[in-house]
Image (cartoon, rainbow, N blue to C red; front, side, top):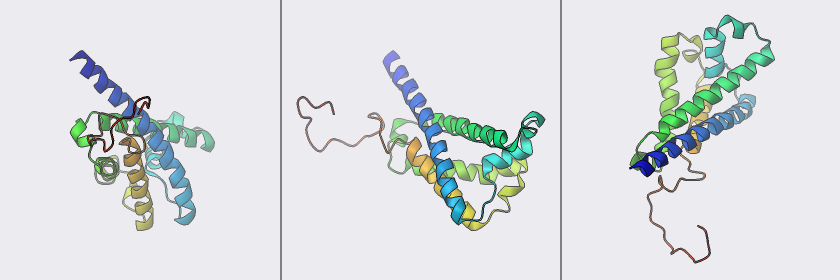
Length: 168
């Protein structure tokens, strides 16, 4: 029982770390897509611009951008930890990560943005929405660990027997 609890804790921590890395990857992808799509304010930037305390709003543009990215990474990490709390049978499904990433985005577009009164969510161009959706698909893939799966989340049986002397 105790071992299972620690294993679960480890899954949540790993998923949180993957969430932070995924948020960082999203920043990189958004930088690339912003060159092709007329730049609009990202959801984290819109939230910080409209709802940050005065102390943050008074920061220089460069520091405010850094604050916004750190805010996004922490938010991404928390989202990853929530994914880590899902049961193994759910997290182990092939499309669980991408579905989770899109759910996080739709949660912002349909709930968080309107509740906070962030005007930018209602006035986005479709191409920018598609780019943000792509960002969140990437987030889901990384959060789910599909690039480096956890043994407990992958439920498929091995095709080949383990070779002696090979750690895999």
